[in-house]
Image 1: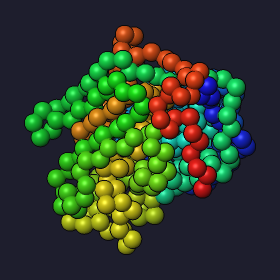
Image 2 (image 1 turned 45 degrees about the horizontal axis):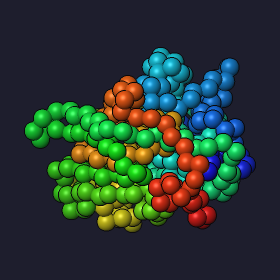
Image 3 (image 1 turned 90 degrees about the vertical axis):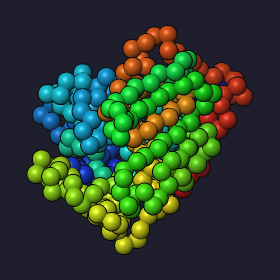
Image 4 (image 1 turned 180 degrees about the vertical axis):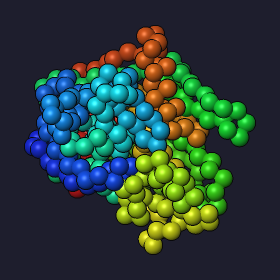
Length: 311
């Protein structure tokens, strides 16, 4: 059977929050089968557990934020999408994440550092079957019209495939690839997606910082773009790094469902908010999905039973 996975030993990371600019420490710990991924705010007088669920997402402005019971006034953890993307890319089902502040550190702005941390801790197969969330019929959410139209869709697929198209109307971004497709069964998440960094525009920075956002952002942890060009001295890691990062984010956002997904995801100009709306639309319709396991690995989608190669 395809089995659930956790890590073999604990591992730690220290960094700053992209939006808060605060120093934060993470301790990633193994968890028992069927635990799921649980953040634990250990900086509070009484530690608080925040399980990752689609309905614990309480804010999607600039990042995905979860809070206890989805209540925006409850203890929260911001900017979880890159770490969640890494967990999905490595097939991790169960994990405790102790955190000393309310925001996951941005590290280098991609998921690559989280992949390295998790693989350094080792991946352990557990004695319980992995449950997959299988999409049984198409679900779509749309927003805006004309030039402001954006949409995201899930359709049945024996595997997990993502296609994303961007349109920023910006010279530097327009000069790169605008559309890409990634198949999770390829085993190339670490190589083709994980290293794609978040990005921001200098014209937006001052406005965001006045609202207490991007206080920890720099060219060390983001692609920075002015009115015409990429300002980072080392340029882009991929010819289409912008759209690959949107795939990275979508993988993390969709993993908030609590299980790996069997579906084809297609999106145009989507973001954290629309991705969460898509999950809520799917999971509110009991006829649109089910949970399945694979007792015989040969019946699973290609590549889903293999462990990602170690670094």
